[in-house]
Image 1 (cartoon, rainbow over the protein chains, first blue to last red):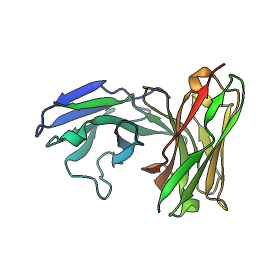
Image 2 (tube, rainbow over the protein chains, first blue to last red):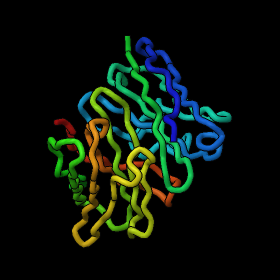
Image 3 (spheres, rainbow over the protein chains, first blue to last red):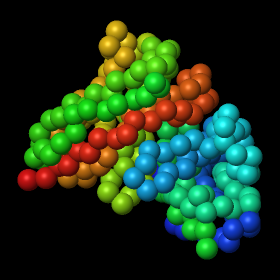
Image 4 (cartoon, rainbow over the protein chains, first blue to last red):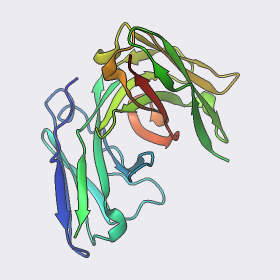
Length: 110
Length: 121
């Protein structure tokens, strides 16, 4: 159950788009299209923004989108806004009713 | 009001035990799997344990296997995490989260506010 690999930080200016990668292995991300993404503001609990790779829960902005290629999942945030500044975590099902998170990525809006 | 509220955090010495509770309200608690996720100070999220909606299956992360046990009482809308043989590296904010979906497909849809567990002598 090794943590998925995410970049420690990404940044972008308001209105721009950024992508956050989440790299696993053929045993987790590569085997299941069951990656979810969570946004966490400082001192707050996480909030889901993408599930099953590319689906958005009701109420989540369509500026957030997800995709997967091989062992890597990606979160794309378009039209960056100040409130998007937060930590982002990917999470994948890894079989046997167990899950694993990524190390997290700090998004800075310049 | 839909919410999850954790109880039971605190400061304990290494090797000691602690039990966390998480009470759900405002939703069909007994129909959802429940998980515990922790976050060490300044660190990322770590999945800890899960239990199916009816308690028929439960799993732990390797880092806590043999020491932590998840359980639930649907009559009380409560999930528990019994933590034994605590170590300094177990120091973290512990969140309970409900899982919306079918077994593996889905996501953590509700989170508690978290409860801090500090393991220190």
